[in-house]
Image (cartoon, rainbow, N blue to C red):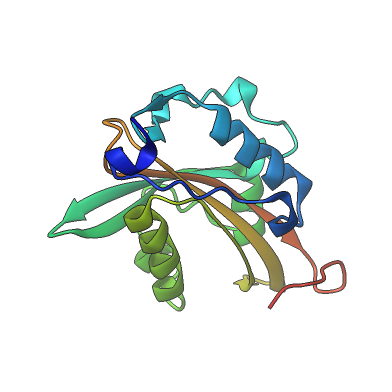
Length: 168
C-alpha cells in the first residue's frame, strides 16, 4: 500500500530547500520513522534519536478535526523556541499564543494537515523585545491511525537579519 492509498502525500523535500542543516537532519529522521499506512505516529518519535543540534527547537502540535477543518493546539514546545519567544505556549492555540499573526500560522499548519505533505518555510517573525528574527520552519505530518493527520511534528531555526540570506 502506498501513501496515496492511505490518503497521504508522496511529497519529498530536497536538500536544496533547507538552509539550516539541523532541520534537514530532523526531516531525514522523520522520513525514516516507521509508518502506520501513510504517516509515522507520535509514539514512533524517540527524543534520544532526534539530532541534538535541533532537539531544543522541536515542537508538536495536536491537530483536531471538526467538519473537515483542522484546529491546532501546541502540545510540546522546545526550550530553544521558548527562549526566543519569551513564552511557553504549550497547551495554547495559535490564536491565543500569537494573536497578531495566528492566521498565517493556522494557514500553514492547515495546508500540511490537509495535504499530508511535509513543508519547509522561511519567514520573518516578531519576537518580544528582540525585534524581528528570520525563522525557518519544518512541518511534518504524523498520525496515530495512519490515515488522517492528527499531529504536526517539526522544528524552528532562528537567525538574525544580518546572518540570513534568502528569506522573504
